[in-house]
Image (cartoon, rainbow, N blue to C red; front, side, top):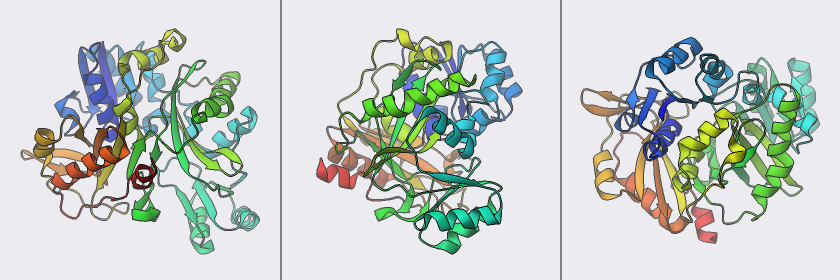
Length: 417
């Protein structure tokens, strides 16, 4: 199978790494990719938001499966353009991707499907914003209705901060605060059948102890030793299958990756948000544990044949990812700094630990930083403690001036396991 992956972050590197290990994949292409993906796939320059350009690239390469990684191309309808060109595509249509593209649309779908979530108001005027903030009180949860690359959500006790964020958005969703730990659960679906993956937990705040501003994610781990063994089954019954069924009923079937961000509250599981693609950095740890070859599963989603698949096979090992970010991230990051130590990790830590590139590029024979989140250092082990130890040992080999990373990824879960 010839496969084309669209995107250039650590999520796409994780996908490409898994696909490169799949014996059914005979040729692997990525557009635009990054310096790390170049080691396992042939890179192509393309505007990932231009559906016609992506479709032309796919047909020109003779691709038999296209995987659209990031949310923005999905919301822009790139998957529709690829399918219209006759190429199987993993990823939802433009209409179905509104599940991530619009928080208000997602709330409407959840209401129709009877999915448990936070009470909320959709606001578009200063008066509505004031009423909603007053109704819920602190902590305030304010979400930009549109795409914001994982940084459109403010959770704060400070009324002025909440108000300022709300007023800066064209349309905003203000909702009640959900207590309890958060869980990410991905499911692959073809619009009818839903195949859950293993749950993971990510770390959104920039600093240790969940301090500092929200980011796109600073690390993740899987499995979750503290979670109810029946969690996946419960979420399938109350969240994932009802959502897929509701979208099908509306005439906007969702095929691809349905990501449920969940809060395990004192009143039960509640949906915080849906995403329409693999999450980053959770993908890095989930795919590290998946033993079933990936390409066939994603092709079955694209072709509507998920019901015919054997159950997924998983490693008993744990996985931990630590994100190495640029100086000043999540504000405007500094880029162009050389990265050292990558060869040392490959020589001394593989196969238990490896580096997935996020914001990198080649420049004059060197690998340099090219984004906010630069690398995802991923490791596996017999348990979370060993996986953490290996991940941080690999992080210590990497040199990037001014870089930052959290030192407490999976620490609490490892201590309790």
